[in-house]
Image 1 (cartoon, helix red, strand yellow):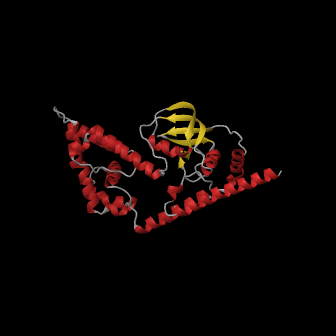
Image 2 (tube, one colour):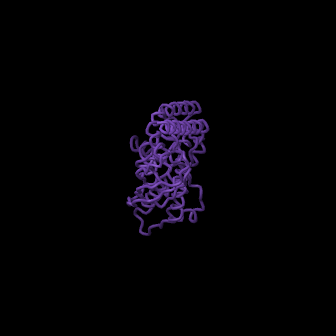
Image 3 (cartoon, one colour):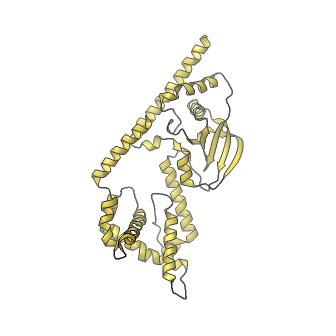
Amino acid sequence: MSDYILTTAETDEDFSRARHKALFNEVQHFLNPDEATLISFSDIKKLLKPENEVYKGMQTIPVKLIVGSEGRYKDFDNRFFPKSMHLKTRWEHIDMAHINDIALPPISLYELGGVYFVRDGNHRVSVAKAKGIEFLDAEVVSLQSEIKLKPGDSLKKMTRQVINYEKRVFYGETGFGDVTDFWNLDFSVPGQYDVIYNHILTHKYYINMNKSDEIGMDKAMLSWLTTVYFPVITIINKYHIMNYFPHRTKSDLYVWIIKYWDEIKQKFGNDFTLDDIATPFLKTYGETPITRFVHAVRGFIFKKKMRR
């Protein structure tokens, strides 16, 4: 009985220590709470868009490479420390098994981008990280992706890594930079280089309509840049539109303005110029400093409620 009491006291202390680390981590990242958030496997799947799954079977996995969870990403912080007291009972049972050298079943993981996400066994991973255990046995399903992620990165940094990868692929496969000598086609969200490529193809199609000698892709890219992209950038600069879209890029705004312009022309006809739509675009989508502050406060309150 005394041994059991001692073990219970030890597990209680271990959980309290892990819980305090989670609280301290939250305080440290008060201004950037996303950096202390465990990564959702669903978010990474949407980001990387893996093509297929491969069953890898039983493997021994470094715990430091386990960076997220399929279903319990709200229960633990980015270091897998418990964020809520309701995890205490299950967490301490796992901890007690470790203390008494009781073998636990393997965890289940997804591998994607060179890092791992928990399918089953979140508490076991949490206890392992808290106790400094370096390896865990796991049943692994791998999702194929050419992008390799870095353990320890936040979702924001992983998103930036994906965007950089997409830029390298776009510039490498199209030769866009060599043809145009323009290397500043940058975005804040993934998936936009495919949009740009489709814009160039559409531009090429309309240029070649009713022509016997079609222009090639190189000339189409240069023509798109000078006659489509740059005029939109001129409007962005003229109306100081970037002031209303913090943390965005001019290329982001190009895509959104073109889409908005197309919607206006479909509803009201083709007589609207870029100058005509600039002010309505700002009123519809732009953020003033006041609305930006209100959105920030609302976002902070919403995140606090989600953690409860």
